[in-house]
Length: 171
Image (cartoon, rainbow, N blue to C red; front, top):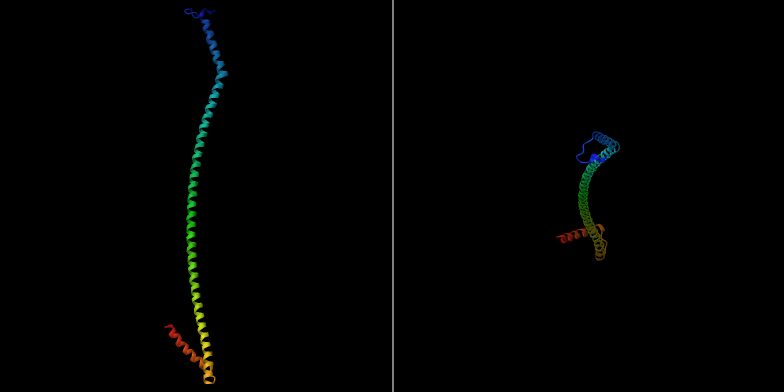
């Protein structure tokens, strides 16, 4: 039985057919039981790897798009912030100018009103002084002359005298 293993022994045709049939039978069993599941498993793995690569590339593209959008939004936000700051500066400058102009106008108005009030008080004081001087001079003249002068004549006399004094005072 083990004689065919001996070196130099002749090859038997029946044994060779038996070995070929066994080999073919074994190949068919491997094909049915192992090859299809292994190739299916390898194909599934290749598909999964391909899908993972596609998914990773898609994710990378989405991330790049998101980065670009964020960069654009950031640039836009910076631009808007700069615009807001510039607008605030401009508004502040305009308000400052308006406040200064209003304060100058108010000061000028107060000055003019004060000058008018001073002139009015001066005129009132002159009128009161004329009246007081006229009344006083009438009384003095009445006592000196022992008779009563007409008030209108005396007032005209006093007015001319005070005008003369006012002209001397102004020059």
